[in-house]
Image (cartoon, rainbow, N blue to C red; front, side, top):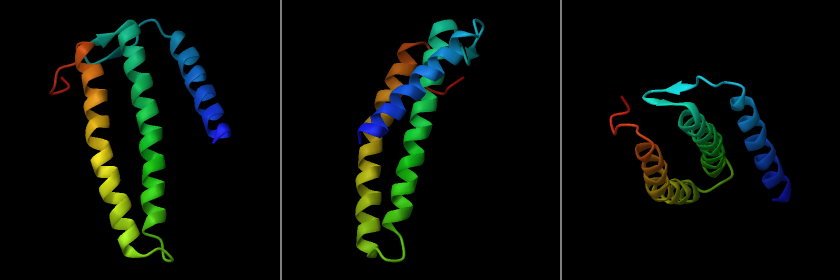
Length: 101
């Protein structure tokens, strides 16, 4: 677990450092610091979603009972509702429209 935390922190720091090199970053109507933060959130959530997908795949594996796969799928679906809301609130508060345009 500590290794995972360390890799996550290093990844975020490297991402921030890479994005600092670009002054004119634009994402939809966001620009500058807000766009860099939004891109960082997007990258972190993409990596997070990838790991959830791996967990789903493993839970439906050949040696796992189907009920385990359904349980993991249901819990992740319930977990993703407030998670998506939290990310959306941050992006909308920074000026993104609900439609993303």
